[in-house]
Amino acid sequence: MVGSTLMTALTPPRPAALRHLHATDAAGARFVVANGVLTVAGIALSLNGTLAVWAIGQILLALAMVEWFVLLHECGHHTLFRRRAWNTAAGHVAGFFAFIPFGVWTHVHRLHHKWTGWQDLDPTTATLAPRERGRFERGVVRLCWKYWVPLFATVYRAGFWNPARLLRYAADSGRALQLVYGVLSVLAMYGALIVWFGPAMIFRSVGLAIVIAFTLEDLLILSQHTHVPMEVSGGGRVAPHSAMDQERFTRSLRLPGVVSRAVLHFDAHELHHMYPFVPGYRLRDIAYEPQNEIGWRQWVVAARRIPGDVLLFQNRQQTGFDL
Image 1 (cartoon, rainbow, N blue to C red):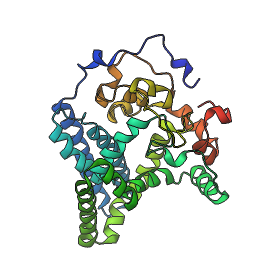
Image 2 (cartoon, rainbow, N blue to C red; image 1 turned 90 degrees about the vertical axis):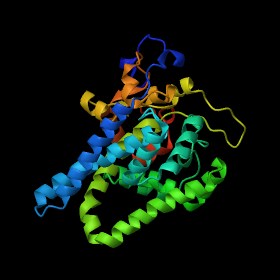
Image 3 (cartoon, helix red, strand yellow; image 1 turned 45 degrees about the vertical axis):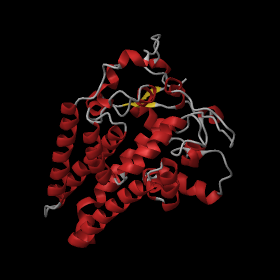
């Protein structure tokens, strides 16, 4: 089994025993302010005239974008701050820099946690459910994965902007106007920036940073549920898996300690699914080592040896690739 060297005899604690691991406004503020400073520094350096300083600025901005994505995720669970209003406000800021509208993200991510384990019902894995795939589709996926083209983080985001899906999400949530208004507001801000500063200046300021950020997020996103055996409803009526049962449907990618702390233990993905009410920055306080945790270097090396279409559209029970 994946990560068997990390297995422990400890029984997962009951959720009621972890209620003391709650969010604090001070902790949330520290993460938002620190990443705001990093963002400003990255943009300022990117506008410098020298190539070397510009490159440094783009790298810093890329790291800030990844962090905004992590903060968006945390705000969607209302676990970055203790106050709900602060989570909402920070979530809209994070969504702007992560290129995902906060309202749509919150709705889709809620469905993701509800249907994790049912591949065709979870909106974040439904496109990977078994079906006939043409040579062209498989070829594109294989090519992008082989040459580190961030196709998956891009396609993942596109789903939050798809008009047809947006209307369906709006209808399902009963908040149609709120979701549509949120999307249009973000689009209007992007449009205003492009008109005000010009496409060339915008591209110089964020172009390379977006590519770097999306490439890093490819690894984070794909490590969590890809190539993991899941169930398929096939259109039948099924019950959601409980949070505690979702450990077997996800994977944790253990990052170096300082990196893990910086990204609010976003790598502790099994623990997050088991205890979604615990703030990310408190997840490692849980005295339990999940079953499918694997070191980041081990996973990247192993996953990169597998063709992209095999990695995405099959699982380890079908291929024998134990990762």
